[in-house]
Length: 226
Figure 1: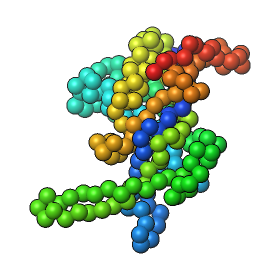
Figure 2: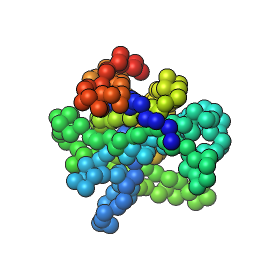
Figure 3: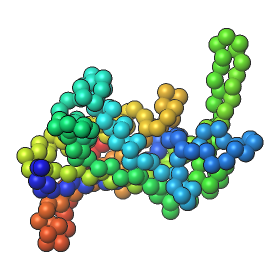
Figure 4: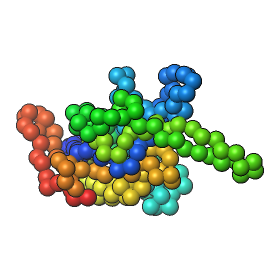
């Protein structure tokens, strides 16, 4: 098993540029209710699952490499995101992506008049091409301007190409800003921006095993500009 030597923390805010819809379960079937809900915590607050972010980042890098499936991904993508296998060719994931939670104090001051507690409702239409009949439905989404705190953690093992791994992660984040997160992306939903303290940067911090052993703080690096 490779030896863990360091952890790299990438953190900041995800700012919603256009309405964000990441689907959740429908908790009620009230007449006139929302047709497609967003995922929420047990307290009813929207959040972005780490699995949604991580899956999108991997998909972006796979598309950039022209890969059709996980086994066809470049080795560096397998190293970062892992490859599940019952045999000896399995690769442990190095990247941990935490759930991104709403920055609640900012939210309350910015959106005092929403239809729902934390979200807005947008009507969408699908048109039957044969009959021309419209099928309206209500889509719940997090409004533009909402902010979520995010943290990525990259495990660095002895012999890893740390700089290359970080470069690929940052590249995927930059491409994601020009793509979309969640559903309905082709209809304009899900554009996001990575920020730290309201500037176009995210914070990167390095913490070695000796830092953990000696209970010393990690070493912040120059923020990554987006």
